Length: 241
Image (cartoon, rainbow, N blue to C red; front, side, top):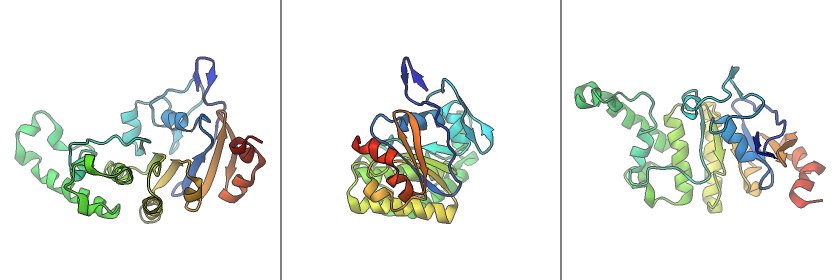
């Protein structure tokens, strides 16, 4: 992935295991977020391919990638600030019949589906531990709660793979651990797959199944957490030798 003469991603190739939690690590500027942007369709790569469940999705528009169940979150949550928590989850429902211009004028044609969507949204909020906040405006949430709400919206969309960009950035340690515990529950109970970019390795590494390490746009190591973190290339990338 090139930006002029800058090689943001340079021959990076790896796969992630289904129903596992993989963390993507590296110092600032190593290409982690660029990689997620390519995988989610925000950037079209200058070379190479993105393969998801055996399908070439390289360069697909983000909404088409999203509809295939590959969903990403952002370091700064992108919520509807004036909508309630429940409403933020409900809007992620795919193919809601009430969204059509014609059908929206005939409530009997979509009211039942709307009730079912609300019930599903309540169940998801229960799953992520936010049920008591269902009627609060999103703008009143803490940073960590906003991160959980983004995960809830991804669940409502039917995501099977989530790419989370710094899910515990700026979050207090207690809630940071809770977020990762929720991630493990979703992996184990729903069989979801996670690719996570995160800098707070003191917390994150205790929860992940595997690590992919990058530096200067290149892949430098991958595998189980302990061997990767002992790799001299990873140590050099973080400590500068």
